[in-house]
Amino acid sequence: QVQLVESGGGLVQPGGSLRLSCVASGSLFRFYTMGWYRQAPGKERELVAAISSAQGTNYADSVKGRFTISRENAKNTVYLQMNSLKPEDTGVYYCHVRNSHYWGQGTQVTVSS
Image 1: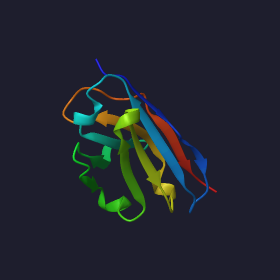
Image 2: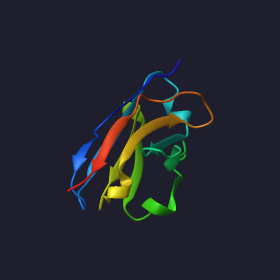
Image 3: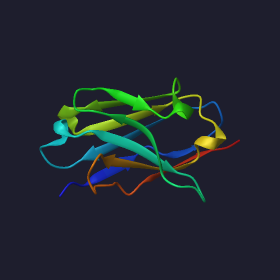
């Protein structure tokens, strides 16, 4: 069993920044491919960014150049640095162990003036 706990969401103005964190339980974190997903009201959950155990990354086209995913295996933590935020980035952001059923509880990000 893996528990994932996200933090760092909040209300931010357009153009602002936030950094999300997700801490995982257990001793196998370094082997996981981790993903950040988001779900906007009335929309399906979508992949925002992912990072492999070898530090390879991929991003949704809508966030390329603005968001950066990273990981710190010594702390069992994956981060999502979000810059130049737009209102369309609003949603609940979830942490996920790829190819598993492990999801965090989500953290709300609202981009609004």
